[in-house]
Image (cartoon, rainbow, N blue to C red; front, top):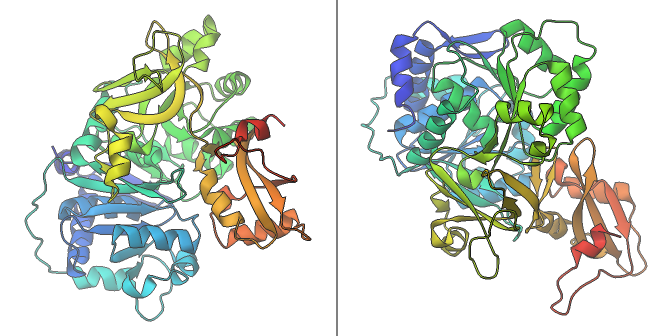
Length: 510
């Protein structure tokens, strides 16, 4: 089955039912079907063919999802970009993917695009706002596709449907390739899991749609005929107002968002009774915060644990698990849940690769229908990550006798701050180019609001001692804002082992 096939059904059965809602813009399933064809014609008119990457840089919008399905219709590969990235970071991803068309959500994002070195080789379409020479407006884009005869679709279930970039410990982003089969497997698994959501009840998409979780949960709603309400940016009050106005039944919030929404809800006098469940994940949350959220919002909660390499959530702590935890088994809240249908999880000894018994900490391995095809043009990294037919997560944890997975620590050094993955190697690579920094190690520290805060431990160049504000300003030109350390500590030397590796545990415990 291909990803778009469910829409073929809903465009007929639910032709006049709401499908995508953004402010005053409301389109039905029937209208979505027509728009997908128009965008597919426009992309084909610009030379897009099957298997070609189409890049999209946008805040949350209806157009993002239309473009995704238009790519599916052509057999092209959807390439969502994080609009928070710096121009150099965007430049690398677009160039690595060999994308030739870039659709930009609004003119406000164009400064970063125009600063990209590869812009001259890109066909840039601006979907809202003014355009400059060599750029194409939305109206020009759609007009050029008018009357184009779409080529027959010639893709298979195992062809790539989208490619999302995730950073790594090497500091270079890697393109994760997900096939139709893998995405449909997630949609099928999610549809079978509680809580079961009624037809016609809206899902609220407020977390960034360039992230795997937000993107795939929006697709999950559309795959069973539910409308999706889209907020371009996160604002706690607008989240609450949208729940009341559109009678939203569920949404996804990273803990930093959840914390802000709960605080706002305590002052909100509107009707939130339609909200039945909140999915959270992406960074740690304390038991006290969760109890506060349950008491304030009065709905069910579920936690998802996953990664881009497994489409998204593959381990789930269900609403029933949460209810039992809050009633009699609080220790369950330390777990991230049990494995989703069509997938498997195991914990192995990192040295022997043998399965660990229940309760023994080892490396978490995942496998099954959602496991990625691999990393774009990185066969060695793919072989390493998928050794033995299992995805090696790099996370340490254990399984209990009932199959609940507990994350103990990270084998890798990734920092999760406000739901965003921050890889120290990227930040270190940027900071070490500053003339005042001779050596640097980046670590995460517990933070009540963001889960973890990014902290840089630096060795200053002799005779220099750059200020925090100067380093922050410097980083803005090299990395995304959420990756920039807000705390800087200066030491005489970084602790290293005999092999020269920085002993980050010593820095964390200092």
